[in-house]
Image 1: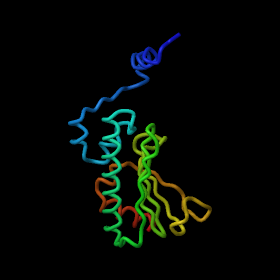
Image 2 (image 1 turned 135 degrees about the horizontal axis):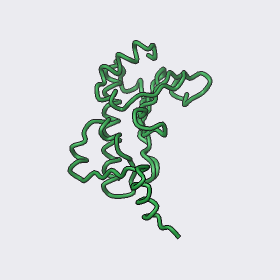
Image 3 (image 1 turned 180 degrees about the horizontal axis):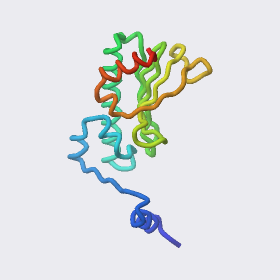
Image 4 (image 1 turned 90 degrees about the horizontal axis):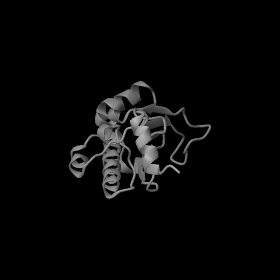
Amino acid sequence: MTTRKEMLQAAIDSNRLEIIHIDKDEVHQADTLAKLSSVTIDAYSDAGAARKQKYHRRAARQLKTLAKVLGLTTPEYDLRSNKGGIAVCGEITLHTDKLYVQVSQSCFGVGNEIMFRTCDGRKDYGSSRSGHNHFTSASRLDNVEDFAAGLRRAGVI
């Protein structure tokens, strides 16, 4: 019987799996959302839990800045953080009456960490009244002003 460790090593040896290790110092240096998104976010270890906490704080800060750049006041939006379980990244959401923006590690891979769409009120979590889901890279939120301008150009807001 093959052990899990042997299976992982075989996957690494055949170039099907890349193991990325980040030590505690690198977690503190990884201050952009794009850099934080480039590694798996989970809470299987203390370092992973710290990385997940930092990811949620950074994404929430960027989404709050986005709301401000869009001219929204606190009563005009909800900002939610759902950390999920230890195996997942969870998601951070900015929800207005007309816009829904969610940051998470996507099953679609790197470069699709931000999902945004139009919505019909803050109780609209994805219905026939919602706009289509659009995906983009977490790096877009590292420059909030440009992301907001892109949302305006696209007519999302």
